[in-house]
Length: 592
Image (cartoon, rainbow, N blue to C red; front, top):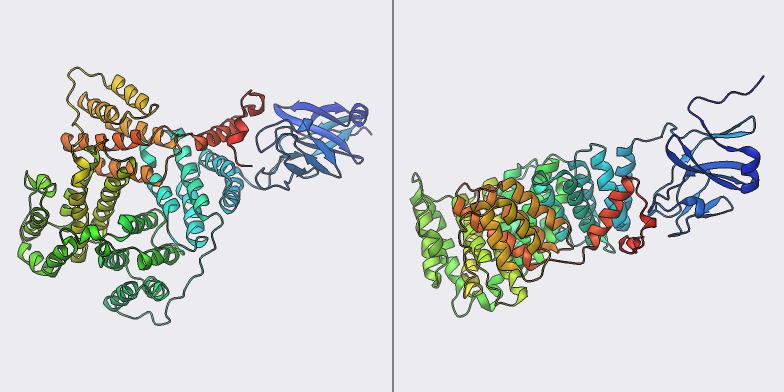
């Protein structure tokens, strides 16, 4: 009785010819397959190396190991498993020999769906800081219709567990990008997820893991006492004690508002910690929990990752700039002592921001700034209203930053703006009286930054008859050139003046960012600027914020774009393109 060919199998070679040749390449229903005869057995795998697509038929086989000739990725021939985690496993296919013909099943049932496979590869990429694996995982997961929050959650858990120093720039960038994901075009959402994941992996590379403290057994302690304990431990820089208190608060089912209040109180007990970074980290950690849920099993770990930074941070009242020639820290303390009284005076009143309020915040005299804040609180201004106004005042400093300053001074105005934005976000979540202190800190820095607007950059003039498409094209062109800071701000403003779609502007600004090798601050600047942009209906305010974002981005572009090269390779591999046939050295940018 003649043997039958199983369903789904495709003829790929003559048995005797393949035994003699040792290998052959075939297309099995469109799948590129290489079939080897090795050690008396027929073995078939996908001919595209899973690392960067080089033909495995060009590789060598020895003792059951297939080695790619391009980057020397090695695979166990019978099953396709890799010896090298950066390469991924190669697909293997069942082989049958029937009546002298070799058949291959090019579509066998797989043990796991793509979403599961790429979730596992994501963990490999994070653990070993493999950018190409992370790019492939981001693309594979989103194209498998996985909710972006799922890989985000994986990275947040990883980043808080495997970095002893706690929450830092990587997780901040990842959270900022997830916040802005709805702004972006579909392809750029893949880029954003990849960029954030790569930043987390880089941040944790070669770092020792974090070893956690435990909550107290007693979880029936009143919140007011837990808050007092937490602040006291941060005050004396006892990170371990503060972590135990915070974990106890989580175990005691304190609300998100209470946990935020506990953290923001400690973060504003001293002035402008670490040039605002600690409060911004705090804000991003709470936003991360907004995405994954405050009832997440790792909530305590996420919040505990903030504690060491709070306890060890530089306190700005210890700096000469806050003490000389004016004792700004002392003047702030005077207002803090009157906060309860001022808030009580404003009860029942509805504050409307005066037309000259931003000008007063930009005053050359510190007392004018503090008096404006004091008067506003007595007039009923909520902490959210004041934080919103001060954030806009900080944004105007960025929009008016003079390019006569040193390049590093961009960081100074940037820090004030992103700190103010973080205080504003915290005020929306937990508007406590203590948080007014963060508003005063932001306003103090707006005052200290006044010299960076001397002289201020010219405000973009309105160009009659401007075409929004042309303005947007010119804006993107500015990002390709060095030094086009003022021009970028002008084109962003003119785009809005000409009736351009704000959503398109946000998408293009985000897309441009994701193609650059920009650092931590640039991601922050985009996210904070667009968040404040979205909160405003006033065209004049939106114009200022768009100008600020465009100018900041242009000051930091262009870059080498190595991360974009890695993303491009991963995307092309997903499409089945042949990277190795290019004349350029595309592989140089990929992490092997």
